[in-house]
Image 1 (cartoon, rainbow, N blue to C red):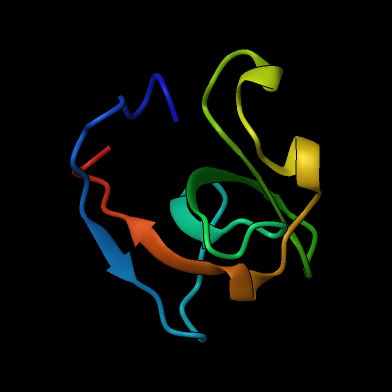
Image 2 (cartoon, one colour):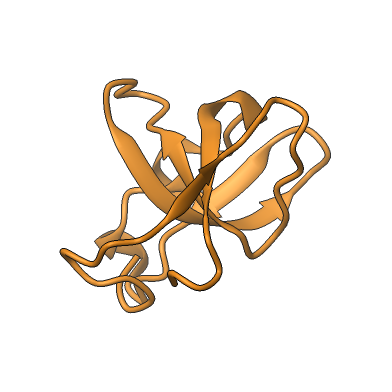
Length: 87
């Protein structure tokens, strides 16, 4: 999530319930769709009504593993939101 978040930076996250909304622009914690033991932090860039497109803030699209690589994701992979004051 560089440059918004830096390596080693401590952030605060709020665990989400199934019914909690996530919005475009939110920075969220999610399970990697192909590596379910891996948690990743990404920004929600778009929502088509069913799936979320998430990406890192890295200016180089190849510098981040995100929806450019694994495609849009289901809401159930998103489990926390980074607090605004942390980012």
